Image (cartoon, rainbow, N blue to C red; front, side, top):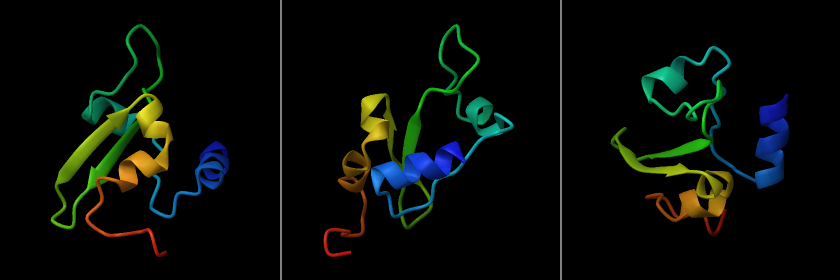
Length: 77
C-alpha cells in the first residue's frame, strides 16, 4: 500500500517494484549503512534490458530525473 501511495504521489507512469523480502536489496547491494532498510534506488532499464542509470537519494525520489535517462520520450504521454 505504501508503494501505491508513493507511486501516485510521484505521478510515475512506469513499473515500480516492491522488495518486501529484501531479495533485490541484497542482490543489488543497496542496503543503507548501519540500517536494516534499503536506500531508495531507481534503476533506468533500457530497451535492451541493461541498466542505463542508477539513481539514489533524492534523485531516486523524483521521477523526472529518471525520465531524463529514458530512451522513450514520455513528454507527450
